[in-house]
Amino acid sequence: MHDDPGTDSRAATLAHISDLVHGHKPASVVIVLDQPSPTQTTLSVIFRAHHLCSRLDLVMSVATHSAPVRRLLATGADTKDIRLVIHARADTAIATATAVTAAA
Image 1 (tube, rainbow, N blue to C red):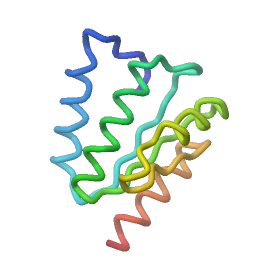
Image 2 (cartoon, helix red, strand yellow; image 1 turned 135 degrees about the vertical axis):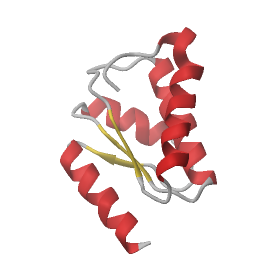
Image 3 (tube, helix red, strand yellow; image 1 turned 90 degrees about the vertical axis):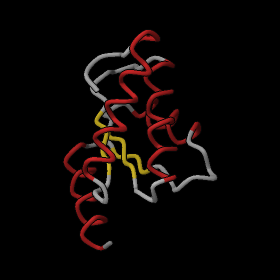
Image 4 (cartoon, rainbow, N blue to C red; image 1 turned 180 degrees about the horizontal axis):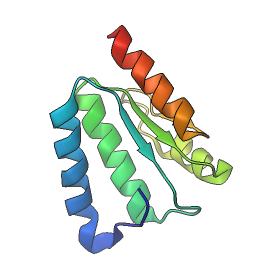
């Protein structure tokens, strides 16, 4: 996610992610946050996408360079769902997702 979707585009962004998830399952999902300080709207989209992936029994990872954002994601993730995997680097997140998908 390069830009904040804003409240007006939150539903459209989530629908786009949902279409990608359904179109590529059973592949694991990776979202890379390029924003240094994402808004609540961005975090909401991530948490909703995580819930969707959990319902579909898919692992979802998020990669962000920002340690404070990683802590926010870890704190805000729903613990009833499949664990949200959080990485500092996109290449690590993608490699992990590829390995999880191959093992499934």
